[in-house]
Amino acid sequence: QKEVEQDPGPLSVPEGAIVSLNCTYSNSAFQYFMWYRQYSRKGPELLMYTYSSGNKEDGRFTAQVDKSSKYISLFIRDSQPSDSATYLCAMTPPRGSTLGRLYFGRGTQLTVWP
Amino acid sequence: DTAVSQTPKYLVTQMGNDKSIKCEQNLGHDTMYWYKQDSKKFLKIMFSYNNKELIINETVPNRFSPKSPDKAHLNLHINSLELGDSAVYFCASSQQWGGGSDEQFFGPGTRLTVL
Image (cartoon, rainbow over all chains, first blue to last red; front, side, top):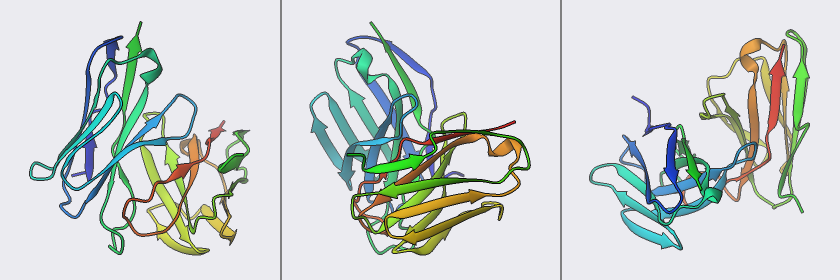
């Protein structure tokens, strides 16, 4: 079983839709949960990160973590064509762990059409 | 001011050749990484260096040899290139090693095509 599972899509939605992107994971040592966004032919960039369980909101983006279910989500409200990109979830244990590196999901390719 | 830069951006070469990719970061970070991204966008870690010391060496053929001359540079040399090496190679850096909230900053990628 992979450490982090993410449906690769592709996902295609109309402008203004609410988008839900999800990942599941198997390692309960993970404490930091991140979402990276990668535009075509560019490197990934950090979009949001959340520590442990709970929600975090940043503009139209909301990240949710449910550690009991080992499930994380990214919601995009009022999606825009400029949100079209690949979204990669990533997670890591606390600093000092022997597992200390980022574990990435496969990425979900999102297209928002006008 | 580019934070993480890679050269070259594109590399097209024949099977069996040897090639190098260079990476530099001007963020003052201690840790640098090499990732390989295949055509399906899966980002797979290959190597990580912390303060010029190799700390991650995933299951990568020994044709791939990283080298970190100083904390700001991490190069990747590939011997005897094979068709399966075709991918986009990303360099990244982070403040420290070992988990936690440190953001990884990625370079623009080197698109390697082996013919």
